[in-house]
Amino acid sequence: MIRAIAALGATLFLASAGVPAGAASNASVTRVSGGLVVRQDDPAADLIGTQVRISAGLDRQSAAQNGLAALVAQSILQTPVDGVPLADSIVGDGGSIAYDVDPHDVRFYLEGLPSSYESMLARFRTALAHPDFSAPALARARTALGARITRSQQSPLTVGLQMLNRTFYTDSNAGMPPLGLPQTLAGFVTSDAQGFFTAHYLRGGAVVSSAGKLGGVAPNSLENVLGTLGAGSSSPVKISLKQLPSNTRQLIARRDIPVPWLVAQYKAPDLQSRDFGPMLVLTSFLERTLADVAGVPTLSTATSGGGVGATYNFDTQPANVVVYVDGGGNPTQVFATALTIVNVLGHAKLAGDLTDMKTFAIGRFLDQSVTLRDRAWLAGTFVGQRLGPDYTAQTIAAIQKTTAADLQRAAVRYLGFPNIALVLPRDQQSPSP
Image (cartoon, rainbow, N blue to C red; front, side, top):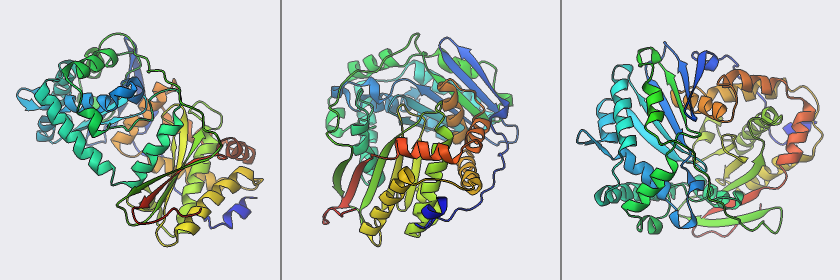
């Protein structure tokens, strides 16, 4: 019974289900030579944000190329355009540009004012068409990546996820550290970067997704971003990792952090699965319940500095759910409670009124799809997985039609056997969850 689960400390609450202005109902999709362009015009927006997703992520690297995908992306941001590094010129116009290296893709994100956006796009296209992979450029990129790697290792959530991802992806290198390692980055030369760029910065499977005040953007500006990429498609590097000898594995790392962290990772359904809606409900319920048990305000759970959370990563294949808890106060109790709640969801018979759970799940999704960056990412993700760009309507419909039987099926199928990472202070021993 749902009330039995609530007795563990959950407090279901109502959240607003109002659809934000500028949601994807007015989105359009254009196909361009193997790639896709998605537009979400929002006349009320003050800015424009564009995500460019290219199939040049971690799974395109061989084991000896760990970090090459990030080095190439960093070099593009530092490529001089009219004598000024791209990232600096964008900031000079009041905008921003950044990238993320994902298991399968590299994602660039450009945001700025409508009045200067055409110029920003043009400079980005120039750097994308003629990146600087000279020895001095690679040296600067390595320095920037080294600083990012150092910062990432100070985040226990990031450390835990990197350990888990290496065991999660068994048929590709998608679980490699996203930014690489200093020792591997040191060996790359111009031909390595140019070779990776030529092989993988291609139009096939690429998605350009833009949201905001697009009325003043020239009709072909976004399509021209795809035009800078080479023709064709790339494929992941195939590998084979040994299957784990048991259903659950515990990984341990030690860092200079004040309290221990637990990070658990589960397999999850993809966007096209009938279990997509049920998993959204389950993960939102888990996050709220853990926040109540740990006495942590829900808003703080989105940060890696402290708190608890449950994240459904439906944008990657295979998809996964990550549950994380910091051990401030009573680590053994909090860790045990986290795993018990997940276990109960997987084995208890769920019944009763799901209205509150669904309402909270909808409100949580809408809260996470407010910014232009969120909206560009969501539309690009849905379209990239061969769904329509109206992610809001599709997600709400999937949640609303979820039944108690759906929750039970999804919990039993996906939330049974996690891999667990413990990130501990250097002077502590492993807790016993």
